[in-house]
Length: 74
Image (cartoon, rainbow, N blue to C red):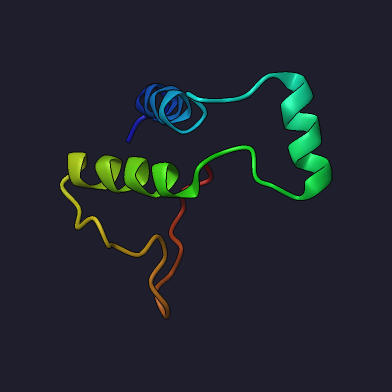
């Protein structure tokens, strides 16, 4: 993906994952109590959607063991 595509996807995923983001006060209280600021299942689904949109298997690994990481620096 190009940088512009990555930015667009990041914004889209952020909207999905943090859509029901509580107010600052509730986020602070959740932080004190050790609760996450987002729903992990929504993040997982958003990532799987990105993978399938890119023509990959939704359960594809981000970095396979034993393979070179390549030259991507982003």
